[in-house]
Image (cartoon, rainbow, N blue to C red; front, side):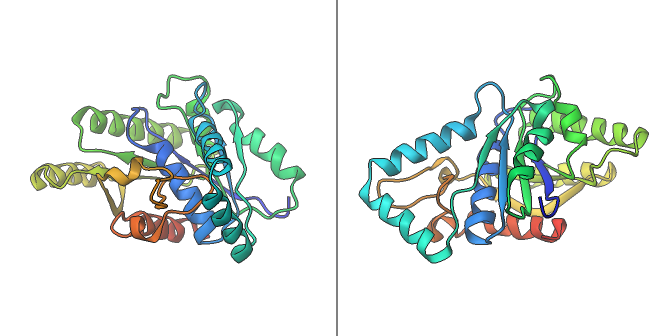
Length: 252
C-alpha cells in the first residue's frame, strides 16, 4: 500500500434515506468520471445490497452485446477497470479494507463504506467513529429528521469524550428533497441545524425517479457499479455538485 486512502461512510440510523444508492453513485462518479481510485466496502449485513447490484450489473452486461461494447469502449478510453467491492461486517470494515489494500499495488484515494441502516447492528458505532469522514443523508420526513439529529449528536458526544478516534468531520446533507414540501419546513430544520451547530452541505439532492434507475433499455444509465451516470440523467440530479463539494472537503 503506497499511501493510506481516506475512509468515508454514508450512514444514518434510519433506513430508506438512500445511503446505499448514493454510495454506488458516488463510487462510480469518482472512479469513472473523476478517475479517483475507489474501493467500496459493503457492510450492510446480511443483505449486502451493493454486492448484489454488482452481480446484477454483470449479468446485464453478459446478456447485452450493446453493453459489452460500451464497457469495452469505456475501458479503451480510460483504461479503468471496475472498482472492487468487498463485503464485511461493520466491526471488521477497516481491517477488511486494509487486508485488500496491503496486497494491492494501486494507490487508492478513497474507501467508501456502506453501513447498515441501524446503529443497533453489532459494530456500527465503532466503525463510524473510526472513519475519517461521515456524511449523513437526511430527508424531510419528521421521524427521519429526529432520528438523524439524535444520531449525529450521539456521535458528537462520543467524539468529545474520546479524542483518539480518527473521525474528522460529520456533515449532513439533504436527499430526496420534494420541492412540493413547504419551504418553511426546510427553513425550520435548517435553523435547528444552525442552533445545534451541525454542519450541512450546500448541495441538495432532489427527489427524482432516476435515483432508482439502473441500466435502462434505452441505454441511459444512472445507478450502476460498472458505468458512470449518463450525462443526460446526471444533468439536474445535483449528484455532480455533491461529488464536487465532497471532493473539496476531502481534499482529493
